[in-house]
Image (cartoon, rainbow, N blue to C red; front, side, top):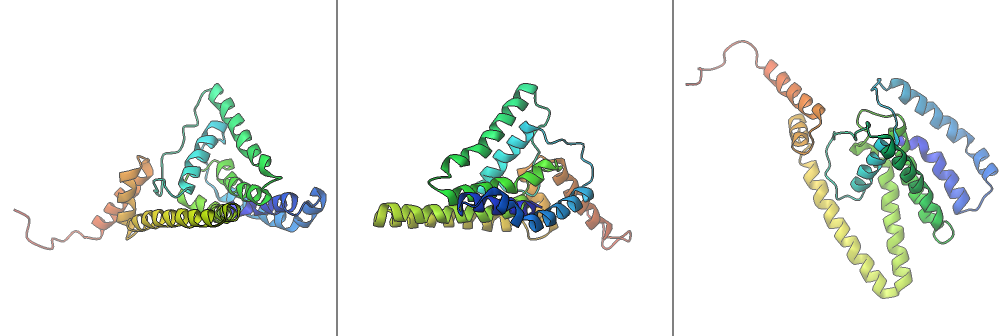
Length: 240
């Protein structure tokens, strides 16, 4: 569903990189917006009612969690406890102000680094569907797939700019930083993949990282299914 926001990224590229007029840019993107709207309606209609509303404080907390996971150094789990939506009015107002600031800050870079602005908005726009539809679990790994593409491009862009700005020293620094990031991400990826050997390992690993009730429910369901396959007939001598 995050891909539905990609037409907005096209518009951002037209405005900040190609400096095209907004009206012409929007006209070009009409087919993309129509396709995105169709998919958004399909997903929204298939979404079961959760009783959740897109409240500012919960959205800000979800943004913060997702942003940390996007760095590659977070704790990855299939389900995590969703942010508490029942915050007070003051926190809701503060959350709304912070969200507006997060979306406004990239504009400060539009003159010097327009491509960075486009990539930052790519990341921000990608989180809007999962937060706007108020899913049961607003922060999950699969919501990071699309924005992670922009994050990787942004890192590569930053390293290239660093090497261009500082010459050979910048190049060596960029290579060293890239090596550190690659090693850290590889280690995290291999560790997480080790939890996906079978359904039991997925849900058992999730219970070690998250207190969300769905992780325990699914682990219990797996054990129940396995027990159901044993049958009613005794297969061996009773244990002493």
